[in-house]
Picture 1 (cartoon, rainbow, N blue to C red):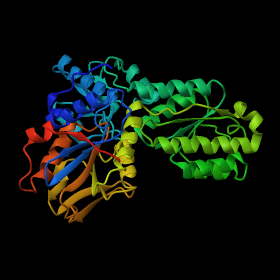
Picture 2 (spheres, helix red, strand yellow):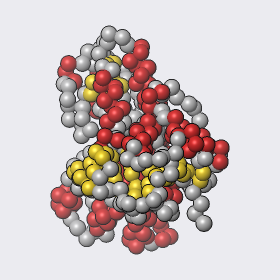
Picture 3 (spheres, rainbow, N blue to C red):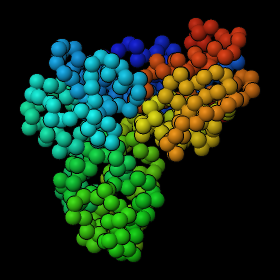
Length: 411
């Protein structure tokens, strides 16, 4: 796989050593056992896969290339390049400005753009109408287009099933940048609709079964379907794709549910005419990170810490998985850990910050699961571990810890 020029300050000597250990021990990526960093009073269980993915490293390389190649020019990002505050703050400090927020609201008027400006397309891609506005201004977006190739793969899948007259069901968050980009392309080839989760999928299935009316549909799914959507005509043939950072198990559950619904309505012998078997359209990194997090759930850790941007979809799903077993703290950086007894962390389900006292249990050794989202620099995990280690005495020296990395034994 291609390697990218990512600034060294995003890297981490500690995490790099762990990843190199995994690479040597498991070159074919078949083992999801986490690595153990044993500092004595604290043991960290490090996920088999985590951190920057192919698409993120590609985006960062292109963004820094844009800065280097365009001295004196105004450089803009259409919106946050990736969902990590540290990376976006760094780009801001280097002179890159954001044209939109994550909801697509203008922060800087497009009317101020000129043909001499540089606009970087984020890893999530961009809706076609936005690209059209930029092209009409003479701004060439392809040179600094950081759209993840795995997102583009989903677009190709939507085109394929749309050309076969299947309505495209997108499993995603309707206001997420990537989903908006995917929706704009899907709607060219066929009708399209976004469902957030299995609950919304079941609601949509009621219209397939003709249990609800067009009027109810427009009220229930307002803003989530393409123009002219007709429940009597446009729910006869379906195909499911997804925002690449959603939970793989939930995408599979949604697709299976729609397939079952279509079988009930049209019969198993006719299912090929009414349901496109699209398989999974998640990116490899999302799959690997989620599988690795499942591996963390098999450990005997006392708590979990997940590091990443609070608006990062893939990171929130890692939190969701960890919460199945552990007290889990979702933080953006080591700065959220105030001291040994107090942590600020994000409740993604209710979209609010929380404060928890005495978050580190009195255990010896204290065992902590730690992982991060695909847009999180490894250096942030280093800082979190160093912060926690600072609360304890007689921790082992780093050289000794790195010389004795081992894999967790599930037996």
